[in-house]
Image (cartoon, rainbow, N blue to C red; front, top):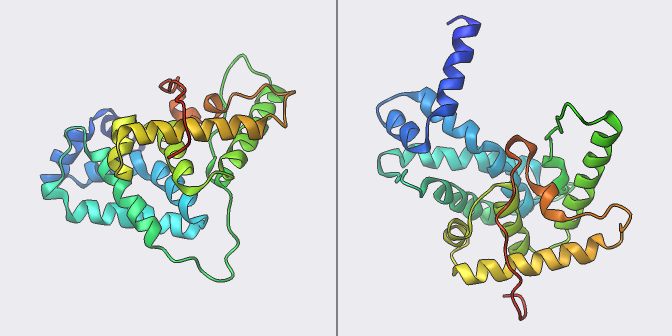
Length: 224
């Protein structure tokens, strides 16, 4: 296959839905399965790193998640449940990874390889935004595991509340409560940088799919 033809093939795979890719993979189209892997690999790596703090573990978790997906291909349900299924598998694999002795734990910011691209932004503005994102991700690292996971899933990977509830196996109300508590903690942590006026949600979304994250209204009470 020539380079232009290969590029067109990749672009065609990217335009297909999860449902189309799953059914194509069941029929033996391994390019379709590869497309699913590349679609979710980075998000699963971020999640694995958020839990294990070990980049090697996070890479293994991404590969193992899709090994399980391949073995379960015949019974996967792509109608809106594939994404939470993949992340649920990744969470379980992450918690089953034992910390390794002598490994230097890596911060979540090590997974932030997104670049800021805009025709109307100068290099200095882009550099400042990269530094702000580093500060926000460092703040996310200070959260406890159950709050860090919902932040990574919602703001960095784009899962909605119902999907996250499936992933972490708890009611939607609990997910909302954990998100609110996490954002309060992040805002308190970032108050040390008032000169930046940082709003954490705007800098957590990877630039490859930058969008406005779903708003979550404040809830009274203590975290769950």
